[in-house]
Image 1 (tube, helix red, strand yellow):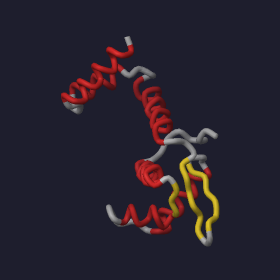
Image 2 (image 1 turned 90 degrees about the horizontal axis):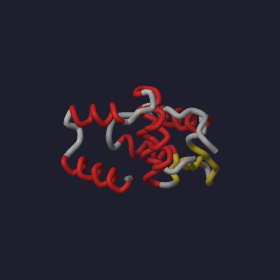
Image 3 (image 1 turned 45 degrees about the vertical axis):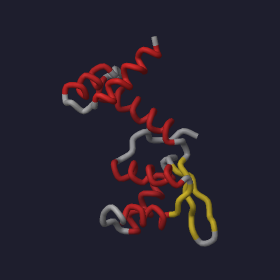
Length: 124
């Protein structure tokens, strides 16, 4: 099942990262993980996770008295889809302007550049 909406807000992506790291997570699990980083209301996390489930990003089931959530897509596939959507929307489907921007803004370390060069050589 593909998510109905490809875009995730920063808050939703933060939640997804916690769920991906844990595999299965309750609202309480996500709330505690977020609260360790910043102030957040339990009801906000609950509402966000319900919305993400309705949009097809998470699936849930009942375990005891709690809903347990799991990501519909594995992290790698979801991020690939998010990046592809971003490239389509922002760079008209072309990765070259994005890479050029990252290089010009010095957002890529030498290690990153070496890794990209290796990947390009392997693709040829």
